[in-house]
Length: 103
Image 1 (cartoon, rainbow, N blue to C red):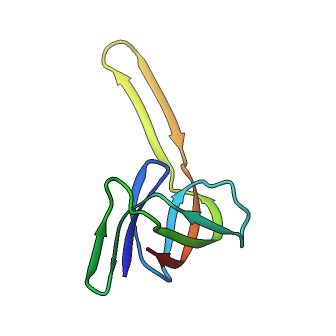
Image 2 (cartoon, rainbow, N blue to C red; image 1 turned 90 degrees about the vertical axis):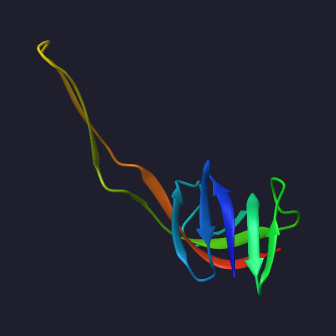
C-alpha cells in the first residue's frame, strides 16, 4: 500500500511505517498530522487516482523530529568585474513517520 501526497508544493510517495522528510511544519514533536491532499492511493491491487484529489483519502503521520538539511553553497560570479557573492543555505524540514493511509 502506498499513496502520493502533496506537502508544501512537493509530491511525495509514502508508505505505512516509513519516515519521510517534508518541508517544515508548525507541529510539536510527537503530535499527529494529517495530509488530506492525496493524489493517488494504491492498496491490494486497487489503484484510485484523483481528479485532482482522491475523495475521502487521507494520510496520517506522527512528527518525529525537526531539523535542517545539508548546507548548499550559492556562488555568483561575473568575470573581469570583481563581482563575487557566496551564500550558504540549509533548508528546514520535519521528519514524519507515516502511521495510516485511508481511502
